[in-house]
View 1 (cartoon, rainbow over the protein chains, first blue to last red):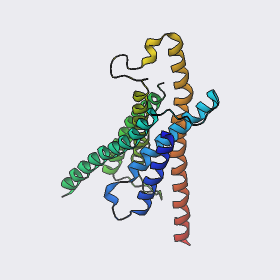
View 2: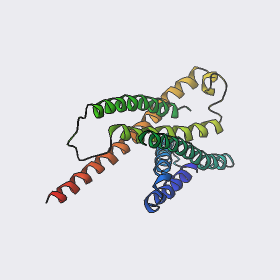
View 3: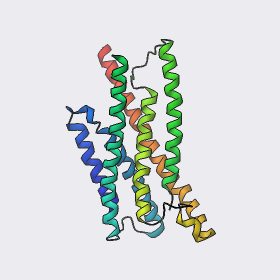
View 4: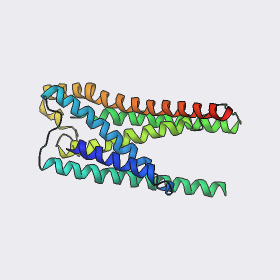
Length: 98
Length: 130
């Protein structure tokens, strides 16, 4: 289930990156890289599960709901952390160049 | 069980490589060595993209493993270690197959994206020349 959530988040972040071009300083590409990588990793996990157990997607409620919530919250938290680091870095560079 | 550790370890390796490359790039800038390459994206930035992807992916998967009870916050961190040699063997096998597969998939997608970008830039440069 969380694979599908990650895939959905990748598509949403890719749309944000492609269509919100006026806010380049928000670095939506970080969201694309994070969710894209997680989707790819869970895809490999699903393929391995399909080979071993013969089941591509499994639903273990309610644990899967918690993991799905973590996927969204964790991904956004990681993005905000990166955004903070890059904003501080950019400000420091501006001060040096001035 | 611990497949994300392979990606996390690769991310650390890429971070170290990026720092070394960045240091060399700064040296080249000081020596004013210019390249004739069409692609303006620096190698350190390209490695930075891979680093973010690897760290981001392993961060989300680490959370999933914690929720599954496969990773704990106390030593030895991986619950499989306390479950006997068979569990450890299974964990190592998973790291070698799924973990390495995940890392290779991310690196392959990153490499393919850079290759497509390079080809598009070359085509653009050709069109400008003509």
